[in-house]
Image (tube, rainbow, N blue to C red; front, side, top):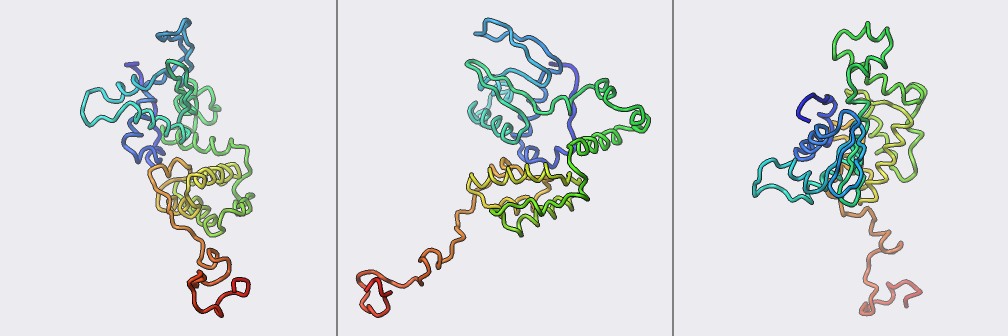
Length: 272
């Protein structure tokens, strides 16, 4: 664990995890603790060694807290708080937590894709790509393009994301979301799969009390390439309702129809 290195991708600068210092520190800790190759590990209380695959590691609430805070300090957060941060990373789909009785197995998502060795990466490249890759920046650009093109979706020219809008999504918000992605400097993939994933995340956020407008506004005011419900964890939903006074009074104006009203002529016929 004290030797070797790992890769940090530049696009992390635009992620919601990077924007939160505690989440970013915990995410880097998870990357460092993850095994780079398969191994068997013995855990106290377990009768048999546990096989850990590349990109996995074993931890618990208190051991993770000790790794996160190397020195004792009164300002340190509790083990439960650090564990909740780990669960937030799971919501952001950075990792997966598989709990057991006395420990949990943490799996970094897409480990092989982002942290594979140079030898493994070279084996996946074609001869033509090896000749064209003259520097690391070129390699990163080509890997990004390969990732987008391998999605199995048609090119952006043959796909119109406007047609994917569902009835519960306001048309203006959907158009603003599409415009944000198309004008983003990182050029995120304009595929059906990508927009369906966004719709799924908008639905999750709506279940947490956020309107689509709030989600799209947060996206437009950020450098995010896409939207995920976990990006709204540090925000509070707007509790104001969009119902008009006419809706609240079922079509009647907001007059006083109580028993104390003296002018019965103003009452609807069925209340006289």
